[in-house]
Image (cartoon, rainbow, N blue to C red; front, top):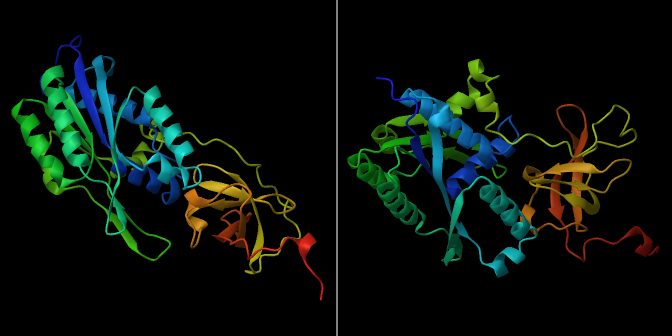
Length: 318
């Protein structure tokens, strides 16, 4: 490709299908060995450098001038009944705001007892087309997988706008034994100028030390003490159920009161319980197992009913 003028700004518009981004981020946080969420800041940096390489220009003159995020949202009343859901929504809103991403929320509707997102593809496509037409983007980036976006791609191609799709494909079995498969529409990938297979880039050995790839993930924050041999001496790993209170809740994990140190538990260790329904102080039952480094953790964590737990001080001897 002929080199473009280095001083000419490459104007980029980024459009997120929020439910797809959440699904991908959950995979890397809970299933993949990365054990971390996708970073919006890192994603934007990756986009600019990748487009600059494709366009044979300098990353310094490749700028995201518009970014928009589309997702369904529960009503305030419904969210308030789901533990810390409103808090986590606001935290992510703050992240999007700090990165200059404009949010577009549609109400989640209930159909036959199921809560479903409706109209996200249409709303995002119309907004992307209108903005591309008036703001004259050079490149439009879609973080999406649905074949419904092919109509948008056709329209933008007709305007002479180049398109990039960030694609993830992965497969795993969830806690219920159900195989979860994620793929991107092949038609969508074939129609865009720059299809990017993100899962391959992230797992490629030759890019293991690439800052652009590693910055795609939120840096871990050490929020619990480092395990040292002997810290849990006397704790029996016997598969028996125990009960105690939730001591603290974080983003996707928490801690249960259990001497001598509080027990860590992960979102994926819950049974018959939604993580968003938990609150600090709730009584839970659990088993104790060890992780890959021999540290005791809580597994099979279940929220207990008020009639199931009797504090030791209230136990009546017969």
